[in-house]
Image (cartoon, rainbow, N blue to C red; front, side):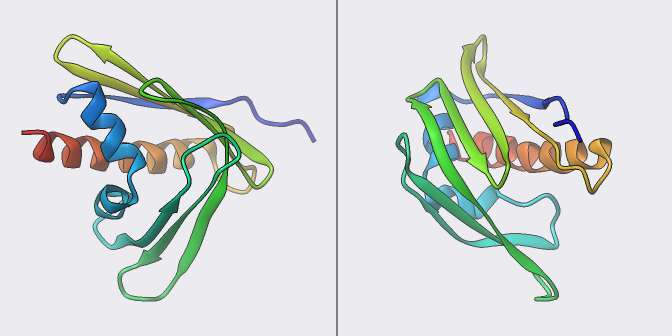
Length: 140
């Protein structure tokens, strides 16, 4: 079975690059935005943001019915520009670029093979949209 091609989601965030980077990488902020819908949350987050460092975001349904650890290893960190990470047998890249009016965040990830790619894209985009909302509300 071949590895699926990476897919991407993106958002333009009306906030300066340095703040967007902090909101994205600091566990104290991650717990506030890392959910695809209002009935999910991230009660715990740890991050050792460096090449070879590990991260773990505990994602749970608010009703307690289901939860899982989204965890992996940072494979390349370029401050204020790029984060590459591996999780399970998959990988992802997040880029940060200053654009007029703020910062563009692009996440490219290798989808898993158990769920439709469109569903995965919707989930990753929903989390990124929550991030955008959080960052813009706290940038001021």
